[in-house]
Each structure stands twice: as C-alpha cells, then as structure tokens.
Image (cartoon, rainbow, N blue to C red; front, side, top):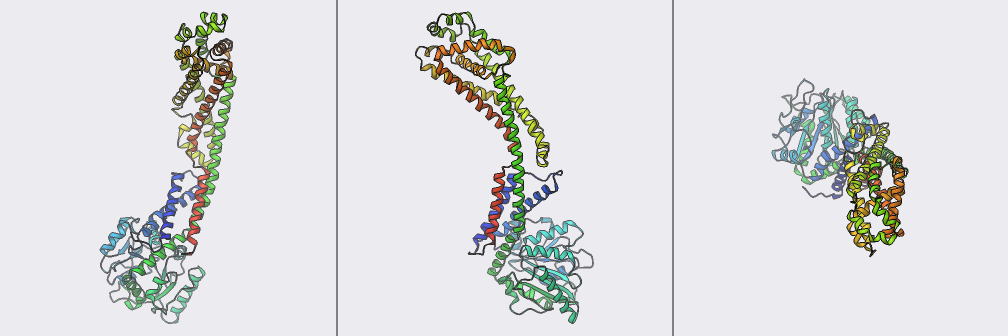
Length: 593
C-alpha cells in the first residue's frame, strides 16, 4: 500500500466504508419481496453505498500507485474497439459489423499490472470471468479497458460497463457524428459528471469540411447544457490538439474537458484501428502518463476525490432514509414498551387482587403453622413461643418447606408466562399493522407467545428471590440472641413464612382459599413478630415485596427486549445519519482548509 499525499482523502474513504458497514449491521437483512416501494428503495440505496465504498473506492484509496484505469466507454458501433486497437498498436479487441462486438471487457495491461489489478487493486471487485486480459501493447502503470456497450440489449453488459465506470480514473468517451445526441450516452455522461471523473470525448466519423466544426460545436453546446463543460475545458478541432500540452493537461487539470474529433475514414489500412495521426493527442497523453508515476498518482488521487464528492447525493439520501427509519423504529419500540408495560401493570394488579397461589399450596403451610403444639405455644405467651423455636424449625411437625416453595414457584411462573404471552400477542398484533413490523413478525412465529425458556428463567429468578428472603431471615435472626439458634436451624422455613406473608399482604392468594389464608396470615404474622419483632418483620416483608416487583419487571423487560432487538434504536439511526452528513461536509472542504 502506498503512502498517500492526501491522507485526509484516504481517511475519508475509510470513514465512509465504516459508516456504510455500520448501517448494514444496524438494519440487518432488508428488502424482502413484500416490502413497500419506499422501503425497497431505501434498502437499495444503503446497499449501493456499501458496495460502492467498499468495492470501488476502498481498493483505490488503499493503493494510489496501483495501475491507472483508463476506460473506453460508448454506445454500440461508436468505434471503442477500433480506438482500443489504435492505442495498443495492434489488434487486441475484436471489431466488426456484429453488434454488440464487445460483450466482456478487454483489459490491456502488463503482466505485473494485471497481478496488482486482480489482487487488491481497482478491478478486484469486478467479476473475473467478465474480464479478458491482454498484455501485448500495454504501457506500464496504465490499464486500458474496452468496456461493453452502454446501450447493450443485455443487462449484464450494461451493468459491467456501469461497474467499470465506477472504478475508472480517466474516461475516453467515444461517440459518432450521428449518435452523439442519443439519450443513453448522456445518461452515462451525467454519472461521469456526478463523480467528477476526468473525461475526454472522442467524436468519431466526422464529415469533411465545415460540417465537422458544426458537429463539434453542437457537442460542446450539449456538454455545456448538461453541466459537463468546465471553465478549464480545452477543445480540439478535428484531428488537431488544442493549445497547450495535451499530454500534461489531464494530469495537472483533470477537471478540464476535451472534445477530440476523428474524421470519417481515418483508418489504418487493415481496418482494425484508426490512423495514429487521428488520435495523436490521446497517444501522447498515455505516453506521458506512462512515463510519469507522479502524474499517474496525482490523477488517481483527483479521480478518487471526485468519486468521493460524487457520492454526496447518495449519502444524503441514505441519511434521509435513516431518519425516516428512526421514526419507524421508535414507533415499533414504543408499541412494544407500551404493551409490555400494560401487561406488567395487569400482573401487579393480579398479585394485589389475588390470582396466584393455589389452595393446596396454602393448605400445606396452614397445616404446619396451625399445628396443635405451635398454636398452644402462642396461647402460652411470647416467651414460650421463643422457647419452642428450635422444635418448630427442626420440623416437629416437619415444615413442608420444599413442597411450598416448589408450589409457589410453579404457580408464580405460570402466572408470569401467561401475562408475558398476552404481552407478546398484543405486541405482535400491533406490529402486524405496520409494514416493517409485519415482516419482522412474519419471520418469527415465536413472537406471538412468551419465550420458550421464560418459565425456566422465572423459576430461576424466583429461587434467587427466595434466597434473598432467606438471607434476610438469617441476618435478622442473628441480631436476636434468643432466636438466633432457632432461626439458624430453620432459615428456609422462616423464608417461606415471610414469602407467604408477602402474598397475604399483596392479596396474591386466590378466592377459594381466602378463609384459609386469613388464618394462615394471622399465624404467620404472629410467628414472625414473635421471632423478630414487628418492626423487623415489616421491613423484611417490604424488602421482599420490592424485590419481587423488581424481579417481575426484569422478566417482562427480558421479554420486551426480544422485540427491541429486531429494530435498532432511533437514536442510533439518527446518530448515523448525522455522521454520514458530517463525513460529506468534510469531503466538501477544500484540501488543506
């Protein structure tokens, strides 16, 4: 890789490539068949930016000393192949009456230059099977390409010509005295102007006499009307060089436009090439560039700068697209957030109202806390309760800790999954009314229900929640000398007591067992107050309730994030749009300014 004399230009290309890659990473696969026209157009523009910067600009930016690419471009029958043979000094490109004669691109380059061009140079992005390589007659440091006709009836041929136009450093546009006003060539010349590609127009088969000057004047008029004629432009009459050095003018002033006329019948005797005198100006130009590596490099840099500047309209359209996509992405994310927040609200309300634990779970614990010896201990006073703690938590009767914990975990997991599934259906249904959202939902049927692993994740989170309650019980019990030993022997039983008290305080018990729950809640509260004191109990219950609420919120956020991951945030898209515009503003500043 060569060291650029304009490192800012190379850095700008790297920046544009990075931004185009970033866009592709943010938006992912796009433009499916049922997308709207606007969406498909935006996707196409984004892909075009990525392809253009990565495949065309980057190879040149990374090696400004790679062979200069000179492109012969023009419509069917204009004489490109004849000019190619003239510049090579021997027949290298087939000519004839069959149209189009050139189907693949003929590349005239030395063996060493071919290696460079194929590996990482400007032609590395062009399909190898569409390039026919020729080395006889090549000039070192210059690759001359005879492109397929720009008006070919075959799309693949036109596409190859368009691709070669994007990698060229200099364009020789060939037309004829009778074809120069055709529309298709001017569409191509508009792209030449947009990317500010150094250009020479060759008007072939000019009539004799004053008609030749009239044709050339009309060509210049049309060029000027199309914005292709620049102040530095130099012109040449038929077969004659304009004033000044033709060989150096493009190397020094690549923005200048030249029109060169070739008289009708100015052919080599074998008919495969033009007479050398007819294109002496172009021959001299190429010889001068072949002899001057600095001039080639300068021209390559200037062509690259023009190509970067020529991306301005596309980059701004992509930035506009991103801002529209940010609005759409924000709307979809907002729908998902609203639907999941509403279901979280309903879940909290259900807990307060009582739709969680089954009767059998509550009955198991009621049978324990309502056992005769525990009830008698309460009736004998707080002192006797504390004296009986060890027996209670050692399991006389045995506390059904595992069974109650499992039952509560299963019931609450089912409760969470049901509400998460409702949130998913609600979101998927709303997204289906949006073109982008509908495509995303259609690609993943799992979005219509809760995540397959949500039940397992909920049970794991509740186990952590219960573990935190147990830690609270152990810490609080350790501060009470009289109960420390008893609690240390039955921390899990104490944790279940607090857990069920949380549900009792929030109303999280179903209607069928309200009577049982009332008695259980009373005994739980009495037992806890006896163990830890009323203030400590209220604090433990409050902490447990807060942690449960945070756990449920975290689980619902986990579910919502499935939808969020499908669309980038609007903030990211808007930031990228700003970065793209900033990159082009930097490219429009004068070098060194």
